[in-house]
Amino acid sequence: MKVRYESSFASGQKIVKYLLMLVLALSLASALLVPKGSLTQTILVLSAFVLIGVILAVIYKFCRCPYCGKRIFGGVLVVKSCPKCRRNLTTGKKVKK
View 1 (cartoon, rainbow, N blue to C red):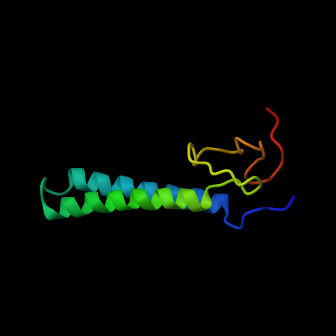
View 2: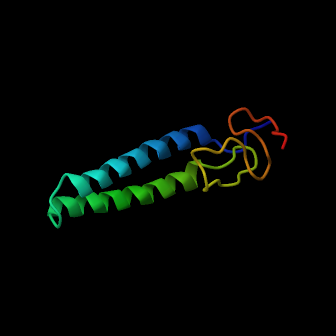
C-alpha cells in the first residue's frame, strides 16, 4: 500500500519522547535546584512552557497515520495502530480487533 504522508510517525514519537524528558528535567531543576523566585527559575519555567508548545507542534506535524492521515494526539507514545483505519503504524498491516 502506498504511504500517503512523507513524515514518519516513528520519528515523531522519538522527538516527542526526548522533548518530554527535557521538559521534565527543566521542571525538576526549577523546582529543586534553584532558589524560589530567582531569574533562573523563571527562565527554566518559561523554557519548559516553550518546549510544551514545540511538543504540540511536533505532534501536529509528524504524529499522524501514514495511511489515512488521521492525527493521533492522545497516547502518541504508546499507540501501535491507527484508531481510524486500524492499521499497524510501523508495518501497515491491518490489526484485527
